[in-house]
Length: 181
Picture 1 (tube, rainbow, N blue to C red):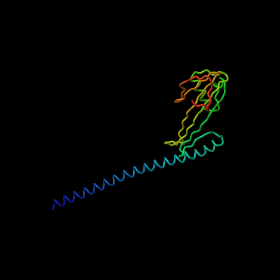
Picture 2 (cartoon, helix red, strand yellow):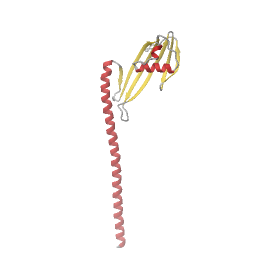
Picture 3 (cartoon, rainbow, N blue to C red):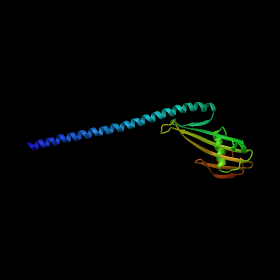
Picture 4 (tube, one colour):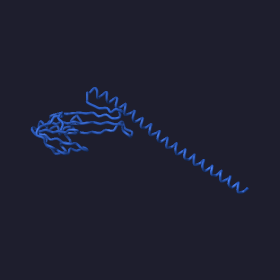
């Protein structure tokens, strides 16, 4: 009889242990599910904020008639700009109201290139905006596709990588944007 009672106590203890284990596992699962739900809600909020910003931005871009591309899922926007401007050395000492031209002048200055009067600058840039994984309206990237500086009959083209001008190459005449290399 004592042996039956010991076995019965053992079975009851095992049931209690199993019950406690099941409750523990359920609580862990609920915590994980809450984290997933919170992350999903945060992602949805970021998407809504980005898409509202995109709608407002597209209204502005359409008024300015800039060239742009919106990706199929509406989670990325590329704005394309082309510049063909003639300036002199005094522009390097002043800040241009156009941020792209101001950056180009800064890069020319950092590269220790000489700017003569009537220097021609051809620039093709992309401003890329995409959904941010953190709590910001968007992520932003800037890229210069073509960077050409011409002084008289000399023309130099550069590559832009990570905020620097590299691979300076000389060409005998000023290439057009429409001409592919």
